[in-house]
Image 1 (cartoon, rainbow, N blue to C red):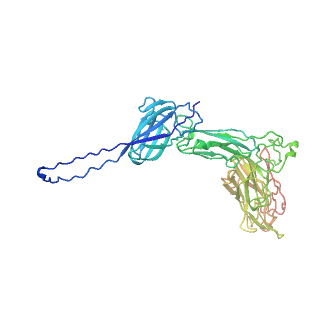
Image 2: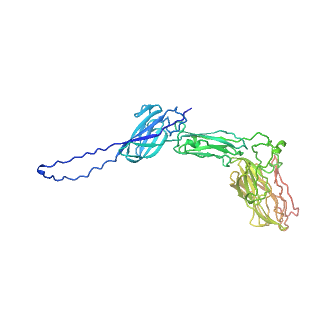
Image 3: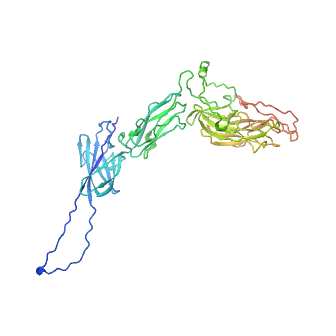
Length: 531
């Protein structure tokens, strides 16, 4: 176990060398005669006054107490480079055998002499862990001072520890979901010799990173300019059922491989009715059988029913006060333990954090306007339950839109990124709209294998229309339709309509891949022009 290193201030003592001036005079000639002046020459220009500046460096012993907090000089220091006003550095070794170095009780006391002009000077001092200013820099100082002629000058300087590696540790790597907790964070910055930097400050600040984007685990501070900034550093975990949260760090000149990050993963409680992890509920009725049975859930037992309570609610999100979709649930999306997806009748598709109800994102997917024979008029947005694909972490929704009341409809399947809502692909499932059909999707989507299924019906039995089931590639590429089936034969003159897929669950699919659909309002008129 290495001992943290402490150092002392470097102090500059300046002694200005006096410049001796000499002159000569001529004697008078006999008889008081004058001597003609000789040729005149310019007086020599005096060189700028300079000073011998003595820099005192105390390299501490490794056994010094942790409790002291001087400015940082590493006990591993073996040499220094000193540059004045950006000039050529003076390189000196700082070891027990070096000139100007002597052992003292506190460590090794070294004095280095450099020449500096009088006036305002800039001193750049770097300390190294190897002799002859080789290897990485352990500490660094850049300061300005005024050297006064004819006086001993003291130039104070703060040496900053140069960070080479960073180690992060957490007081708890497995907090309990549903229980807020303050998690202590320890950040240890080390120099290139492997010694912990305990003096103030760092040569460049450390920036901490937090993988959680939900706000469930904020850091109390993200910029550390000195070891003192890491005191009482913590994460305010709010108890949310988020996935793994990783705390990392970066600093100028520190490679990612020299950063040891730390993570915590909330776990579920064990008390009856207490917090628990989520299971995916990816489609209407849990799976394509639409029976609502989740074989992976065991917490909702008769004895736990009394513990059910309202955790959160949202009303009229984005001014959409109506939904006919069953919310679906996806686990471990973008750091959230669970994300709920659903659509509204104004065409808004939304994602919510399942634990807090925080709205994560929304997308407007369009609306269909219609006017019924009865005189009623309205619009249809998203009226069918979406479906989630955990493999690609994408979610599929329907989209109904047209240019105006009873105008031909464009019904689409839209694929979105579950974490961000970004639309990845979309495809129309209306291969034709004979005679101005007004077809709309109002039922749940289904995902089986590499196909997505969606049924259509009518806004309000407004003739002409035809129910159908369409199947498309799950990446929504290639031929627009793999297959589609109409349940009504449409005749231009007869206007036979019907065969709508009205059920909330859409189609059902068994383990053998057979697809089942229920239809309603089927018109059994003449079939002379099938489509």
